[in-house]
Length: 141
Image (cartoon, rainbow, N blue to C red; front, side, top):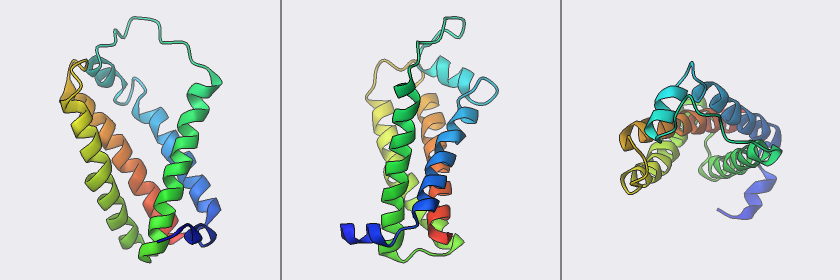
């Protein structure tokens, strides 16, 4: 694989995948979703005022998801993933094999988290679904 694969990716698929991954978080982490248990897992008082958010608080993660979707698209091109089933396999390999492992290690070795495994399950689950969606989109589009 080389950076030459950047010429072979579908940039519209990357943008849509990044935006969907980002938007998934709005539902995943709201109070009707996993917001309350996630807040509890990090020791955040749900009655406390939320931290001040800036434009960068929203733009930064979106940019990160676009970078992640670009990397996934490059891997899809390099591996020849171009079907729905291959997109699922790619998403599971990246989501479970890399992303979930990193979140697990972070959870285990972060003593500031009140409920480490709850935080791990919610956070890793979110990114696994986001990576699956991105992998499928960039594979089939």
